[in-house]
Image (spheres, rainbow, N blue to C red):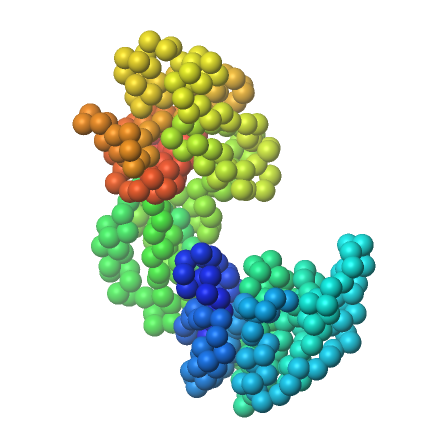
Length: 414
């Protein structure tokens, strides 16, 4: 089934807000077997909404819309939908009772603007929004479905999970199977060359996608078939062939991030890790703690940004700092050793670098990063010369550091 996603909001078009809703919805639709034909971002204008709907309904079977359903004057989506479907706003008692219940639970008075949220287009079926006052709205026309939802991400996700996804079904007996492998340390172009013959011999109903991100490339096999066959077994066999071709480049057979993988390995081994960060400023700690259950293997970290802080917190010799600088092998190894001892962990990771855009020198240009990993019996460090902007250098350093730590834990460091 062909699907269009329409996000409404000037804030998206001017770059003030990043459209994460479309990415999330597209992922969920893909898992369900729906083909996302296109994603549109449009302005808060009636004519833009009408034009987008007319274009989408020409080819798409399902249209998902987000945005413009709030209680303020700039939220015009309901009025635009009324004019598009030639209907009027009507009071819906069920929606009103839901909104009233939300305010009663919060012990707050309901304002007139919130009461107006109970006014919905007469042509729609209201969908209860358990997280907010703006109901979702479903329209049916000429065998096609349009669902309008709030742009607030957690409200949209609630409506998708409660109403939209349950009603979506794949066509008849079609099967859809996914398998993702995570690779590290080898560029997408080289992996693609190594898999040329493999791809040339894939059946027409199985596709291989490359999803690169910094030091990693996810390889996703997608199989869709309506015939009688064991797709799961076929996809698993193909994944094994990829592993045979690429060898140790494949570091996981799951659709997983490097922080999730490191955490999984540490949990399995009942081991722990700690961090000492300088140039990344706590970004790596954020990566680690974004994983549920990370407290089982991550007791804490330190961010030692200044020379003085490195000396006071981690005992880095001030003379060494002034002689060779904070971005050096000597300093980053001392940081790694000290933080491991400080938290009494099995492993530690330390990072120090020049993220930019200023601070570089002829000997240490912007993007110079030293990373060290440490165990109870080994210390290893490496210098990288990164070529991105400040944010890219910080994020890439974090990914490189966690991959280096993974290799230390599993015994893959040279």
